[in-house]
Length: 319
Image (tube, rainbow, N blue to C red; front, top):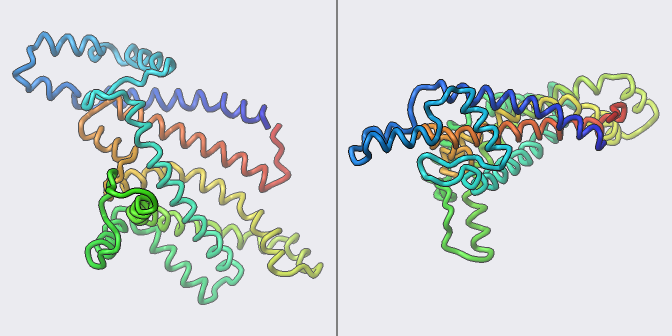
C-alpha cells in the first residue's frame, strides 16, 4: 500500500505542474492589470508605479514569471494579495476550513440520500417509489445550485423566517448557543449542495445496482437461500459501488464549482467567495493560489477513490 501511495503521489506531481503551467499562462495572458487602480491614482508618481511593477516582475516574460512563482511556492512563499497585502497562504488557511466543512457535510448528506433511495428504487424497478425517486432526482440535478439557493432563501428566510440567509463570522453568543447559531446558518448552504449531488448520485446508484442485481452470482446467492437483505447488502451494493466511486471522484471539480456559487449566494466566508473577490479585483496571486489548492484537492480525492477500489473489490491489488 505504501509503495502504491508513493507511486501515485509521484504521478500526481507532473499533473499538478501541468495544471499550474496552464493556469499561470491563462492568467498572465488575460486582459486586465492588477495595478490599474494605481495608474488612476494621481497621488502615486509614475516612477513609483514603475518601480512596483519591476520589483514584482510584472513586465518580465511569462516563463520567467512562472519559474519565479514556482520557486517561491517550493520554498513555501505563496506571495501576497495585491488588494489586501496579506500573504496568500494566510488568506487561504483562514477560509479553507469553512469550505471543507460545508463541502464535506454536504457530501455526507448526498450519500445519505443517494444510497438508500437508489438501492431501494433499483430493487423495486418501475414501482411507484422508483418513478417518484426518478422524477425528483431529475428535478434535483436539473436545477442549478444558485436557483435552489435563492428558492431556499425565499422560503426559509424571507417567508418563514426560520433560517438566516447571510453567513455571519462573528456570532454574539458562547457555548452551545454559538454552536446552534453556526448550525442554523450552515443548513441552507449544506442542503443546496447536498440535494444537488444527492439527486445525481441517486441516478448513478440506481443504474449500478440494476446492472449488478441481474448477474449470475446474485442469482446463485438467492438460490442458496440467503435472505434478500443479505444478498442486497453483501453481494449487490458492494459491487455496485465500484462505478459509483469512479463517478463521484470525477464529479469533484463540479462539487467545488457548485461550492463557489453557493458560498457567494449565502456569503459564506470560504475559499470560493475569496476566489470570486480575487477575480473581480484581478488579484492574480490569490487566483493562482486558490485554483492550485482546488487542483490539489481534486487529485487527493481521486487518490482516495483509488484506495476505496481496493476495499470494495478484493480483486484489485495495490502492487
